[in-house]
Length: 150
View 1 (cartoon, rainbow, N blue to C red):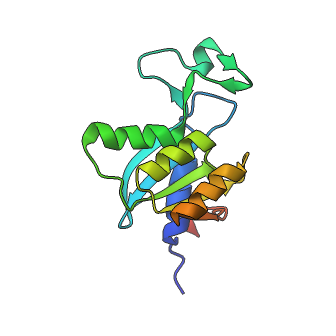
View 2: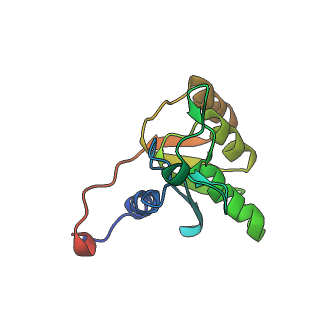
């Protein structure tokens, strides 16, 4: 029996690591876009490039939401758009259940499966949209890892 990480554990562990770059302490979120078991883009919560981040300038709150931050899922999608990489048929691994706006963007971008770690504010309309589009959505927590994955 191998101690090798499963693909799901590998990609979720990457999402967790990427979340450590988040600059908004309201939620440290990391996202990994995967196609054919290859990472094609990553993203984390942070301000618009070359502008203030929450950890520097504080939160910019409006209606209970920090609007300074670009969400991890959006940053991963934007990275693909900037580089001309198709997201059709890709899978997303993300540390938190996507918000409704990220869910809509992910579905429009052709994401076929969403795997999340934490059920954070799982919006019923987001779940209904995923169901309607036939997008698989599963919760997955990676086991505690030690060096070598053992």
